[in-house]
Image 1 (cartoon, rainbow, N blue to C red):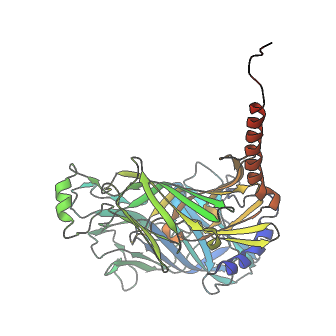
Image 2 (cartoon, rainbow, N blue to C red):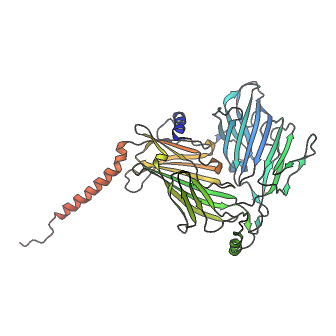
Image 3 (cartoon, rainbow, N blue to C red):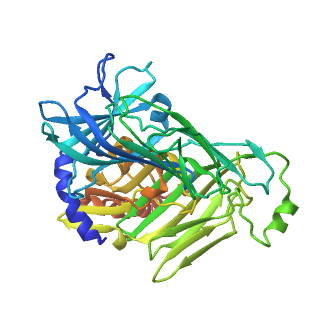
Length: 492
């Protein structure tokens, strides 16, 4: 999508979401309700399809549900229950209208009503209240991080890896469901263990297995709050790549015409541990026929076309086992860690690159500017990458004011946003820094837009050159004045 189209679509959102100057944007907070709260039984789920995708190293769940207002009044609040443990690991919560993609304005908020209760809720506020007996089809999607456990927990470096995932064959719901089914999609057909339950109708037993997919249901009417614990164990001989802390700095230079990016990773492999000491000789021998492995061997980071000056460092220093390819069609940074990252191992590293500011920065009008950059970039792996804690900092020029932002990342993922100052070389008041913190995102949100608007006047842009000029002139005048002082002893 061209920048101008994105900018035009988002300018109207700035005035609605961000009305006051120097406000950094939305900061999500929990909605507090009385401790005795229970979702009012004003809806029923006429039909529900629950899809659990375990094809990557994080779990993605999708709920397509036809809801119906069974009360006599219009309703606009739909609640979805989760356990306390799930609330800590859930992220990327989004809601859409399945039948009309043009409908927007769904507001998703976590609800806090009793910290001691194991059942917590997300509240979905509909764009317009649903009238009595009215129906609407919702498409709800979210992700779980840290949701797998390897079994066995320790294996040889050349063995297959198996993961276990626990779920409910009934989709968790605060409302009765007339008809539903749950589909579990797996990366391969090697599924040695899975929970079996009694079937219904002509089907004697669930699930029905078709290749790499398990289907529980369809089930007849299920009451509100019903669960049916289940688990599945499946082969996943790939790295379970997890970034516990992802720090991304975006430094904008008007004078240099440059945007500098730097990303710092604290990366773990959450797969099975090694049951014996790592054997470097066996590892080197196995690479000749390139077998599938649960160790992380390399990372590929696609960048915007025109990126340059890429680098890759870790705690020791520069890592030479990297390759940067940049041409008119693509820019890719290929990384190879100093060692294969097996289960339970940690690898912190830093990457960075530069780009022409014309690619990301546009002058809106007068002294106003728009910066459009990806919220998350980083590696793009077939097995996926999960980000637990995210911190994005946008370092604007000294004197930038009236900073506002808009992002297509789910608002419920944003935990904090601030605007402050940071002093760097030759600064007087310091550079304006927008800091956005988020949690529990995955690489599916890679390249989602972060649009920052700010004012940067001509006087502010001339501040640093004038300070450098006046400082140099002061030094020269001072040296000239000192040279005119007569320090010789008098002969009289």
